[in-house]
Length: 225
Image 1 (spheres, rainbow, N blue to C red):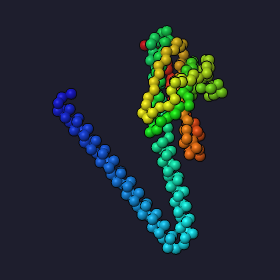
Image 2 (image 1 turned 180 degrees about the horizontal axis):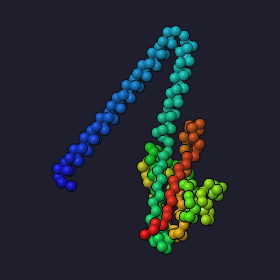
Image 3 (image 1 turned 30 degrees about the vertical axis):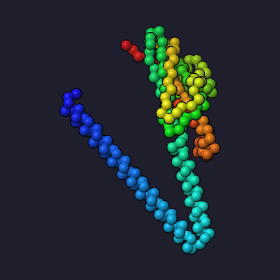
Image 4 (image 1 turned 180 degrees about the vertical axis):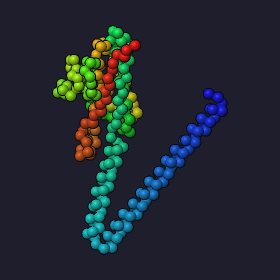
């Protein structure tokens, strides 16, 4: 890249950053203005109730308290509930011999510590000439019927990363495994992460179950040379 091109690139980058920061600042100003207006409206509403009927004022305060509790609960749910990103990265070591390396990555994308309940890994083989292969991977025997086509042989999903108890925000845990597979069959791989809400399950019991689950799947085939 030429020096002039570099300068133009840096200028464009700074200009984009400036526009982005300016946009964020405007959003914050608008948000603060809306909050101030809401406080003013609520204050006038309560003040008007005090001058008319104490019972009406009591009802208004109770209504506001309920709304505030709902907003706080929603805020906790959005900002402090666990979120993870799952990735499966396959690499053929020897396609002819069917030696396959699979790397799994789990990233905590939330703002809180993510408590692990269990992590399961599944790899099942299916025929290529089935005409259609759906995305579903069965981690339990009872769900094998949902796989199209059915796997050649079902095996119980393996629980992995047993030494991991929790993930800090932005932390990534990765693991690599090597498998000897049949290269003439489809390798259908699934990764599943389950977390426990911990103390928040008592606060958010009406929104979600106490266990949150994420699953990702990938189909691995032997590409023709």
